[in-house]
Each structure stands twice: as C-alpha cells, then as structure tokens.
Length: 458
Length: 106
Image (cartoon, rainbow over all chains, first blue to last red; front, top):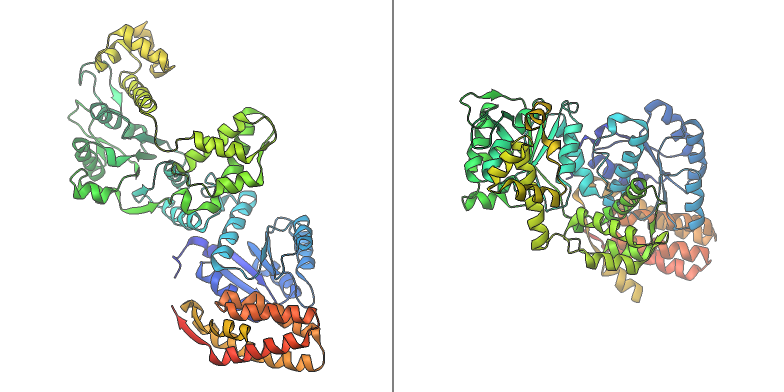
C-alpha cells in the first residue's frame, strides 16, 4: 500500500474506452492518493471537464468515436494550460510528434508500469503547478522526476504546515539543506529568517557562542555582546546541519533549549525566550552514535520527531537528466552565455555513473564540462573526463584543511564582530599573521563589523 | 508447440493484492474476447481481431499477465498480416492459458 499523500487534492480525469484499462489505471492512481474521475469517451470527457475542473487529463490515443488527438485539441481550445498525458499502444514517432505539437505534457507507451505512470503524473502536475497555481508550488527549487522524491516532497509539504521538529538524513550532497529550506518556505514562518549552521565546521568553544550568543566580557576577546543564531532565527527556522558531529558538551545545552524554548548566552545567567522551528540534518547514523555514546539519546529523540530520508542520486537515476538540464540552464544564466547541451551519449554515461558525491558532485561536473567545452554540445569524452577529474565526496587533505581554516576564520570574526585584534588573540595568532590568513582566504573583516564596532576599531 | 510451452510456463502469475477485486472481471472479459475473436475470424473481420489484440496487449501487462500481453501482440500482428493460422493458434493458446492460470496475490 502506498503511503497516504496530499495528492488527494489533485483530480485526474481519465479517458479510455477500454473498461479494464480504466479500472487498472483508476486503481493505481487512487492508491497513489489521487482523486480519479473515469469516463469512456472523448465526448463524455468534454462534458465532465467543466463540471469537475480536473488538474490533469489522461487519455488513450486510439478510442472509438473521438480519438485522443481530437480530444486534446478540444481541451486546449477551451483551456490551453490544462496538462494532458496521452497513452498509446504503439510507439509511433509520428503520433508522438503530432501530440507534442498539440501541447501534450507526456506521451506514454502501453503497457506501462504503475510506478512510471504515477511518477509521470506527479511530474506533470508539478510542472503545471509552477505555471498556474502557487498553492501547489511546494519545493519548486528541488529538481526531480523520481517517485521517491515525489513521495518525500508530499510528506515534507504536509510537515511544512506544522511546527514539528524534523531530522533529515542522507549522504553528503543529497540536498538536505534545500529540503529544509523548502519546508521553511512552505510554512507559516516563510517570511521570517531561515538560519543554517554547519555544526561540524566550527570548534566547540565557538559553536556555543555562535548558537546561543555571548555577553560582553564572557571570554577573552568577547568585547561586545553577541546575539547567537537561535536569536537571529527567532520566529523563523534554524537548520542544524551535521548535527551528529556536535560535541557532547554542547548537546546537553541544545537539549535544554529544545526543552525550555529559551537560550542562555555564554556568560549570562538569564534565559532569553526564543520561538524557533528546528530542522536538523546528518549524514551519520545517529542511532549508532547513541549506541556508542557519541550522541545523547534524549537529544536524538528530541530532534528525530519526524525523520525524512534523502536517497542518494544512484537510487534515483531518473532525476539525473532533469538535474543536468537545470544546472546547464543556471550556468548559462549566471555566465550570460548560450546554453550548452550534453550529447545523448554523454547523458547516457552520466546517468549510469555511480555519483558518490551526489547532486553536489553532479553540479561540479556540469560546471567543469561547461567551462572546458567551446562547442554548444558537450561530448561524451568531456563528461567522462570531468567525472574522472572530480574526486567526488572525498576532498584532498589540503582542500579539507583550507575549508576548515576558512570556516574557522569566519566564525572567529563573527564572534568578535570583525575585530581583528580580538579575533587574532582568540585564534592564538599575532595580528600580522592573522591578516595574512584573512588575505589568503579573501575574507574582509569589515563585513563582520557593526557600524559602532567599525568606528571603535578605526 | 514452442509458444504453448513458453506461455504455459507463465501460467502462475503473481498479482498485486490491490487488484484482487478486478481480476475475475478482467479474466472473464478475456474469455469473452477469445469467443469474439473466433467469431470475427470466421467472418474474416480482421479489424475486430486487431482492436481486441491491441487492447489485450496494452492492458494485460499492467495487471501482471505478461503472457496475455504477448498473446495480444501476436493477435494484433496476425490481424495486420491477415494470418488466420497465427490468429487461430494464438486464440487456442489464450483459451488454454485462461483455463490453467493460477494466481498468487502477493
């Protein structure tokens, strides 16, 4: 039995003159949560459309009386935006081309499997929603075609309407932050801040101050009062990425915040009430962490009220092509260049690659291919080269060190509000060395200063 | 004979329990199709054979009856080629298959 989904709000008008086909497709679609209105001829379909106002029409091509093509033309004469999926018993290119010219959303060949039909219906509805109904726009930034992600987004959409605490699991690069953001933007807090923090990138002593803030003079270098991210996210959502890497000492403090809905800045004795939705994410097995005492059990249950799992890209290969198209389009817009395309063999190659680094790796490969290809079409050899040159999820030690150093410097500057002397002292370096490091990473301390702070430093 | 042994090897069919209520009606309709095809063939009404073959081919696989889908394809092609012998063989297969079919809902 498929999981119940919010798809119940979608009405599908099903048109086929074969009673057994109607029964089969109705059963599949109802099981997937759609409301189905079956009719057995094109003329009946035309009469029903005005009455039930369907979100989608699925019609057979070959029918007694009015055939699928005629029905399609008639529907679009009245409602040009109505998505129509056509089923055909024969894979005839001429029919498919004609149907495409008439504005068909999908042309599917029978026999068709349930999973494929449901996935195509969801995909079509999603595309149509982007054009006609903002209420159906949930997760529009998440590019997918697979049934797995479709179901996950249906669930996420329901959760977005609540304030329930969510734990997103999934390997690195699967889009955990994008999903968290979609949930935030799909809910009542959407006009309030969405604050994301990577708990693994910041040392323990700084992470506490980053999350909960500190009072002036709370520790060496704390020259001014600092408002933590929980307060910055007040009325909105805080996204705690890589929460599994949070030091044990901080876990108990986070637990207290989740229990009391109040933060206590470092150096303060008073709790400050906060109204924050918490979404956390991890690529580690938190249950295992609990067993090996690396993660507090009580915090695990606080965070894992509703778990959502993002499957790796290798388990949803049907998403690869739409993702490739999406990144090609984005890069052409960003660089203001003509949009490139992958040769069909290149797409085939990329669609069957292992993708251990998931969507992030795919994005890097597309960028590399675009940068290194002069022609409009990216050949398969380039795709192969780009994939070979991408070490995927495993960074070199040098890159990892550089990433860490950069995050560290940013954290220290944020804590000290861009005060370089204080930041250098906190980092155990002299001012000159610290400036050198900032220059290496192209970090401008001014960007971390408040106006008052800037005038004090000057 | 080769076709028969192949089709018969597929006589045990696993069907989605969600479709259980639909299966008796679906199989009855195919029994009726077999009779209609024989009658059409007697009158050399190839159009009816083609329509029914096409419909069986497109629909049966979705219910889980791949052997029926294959027979539907043979009937459809047989009608296009006006090959009465192929149609007769296929409709014999169809009826024998429908008599011996075993369904497991899981």
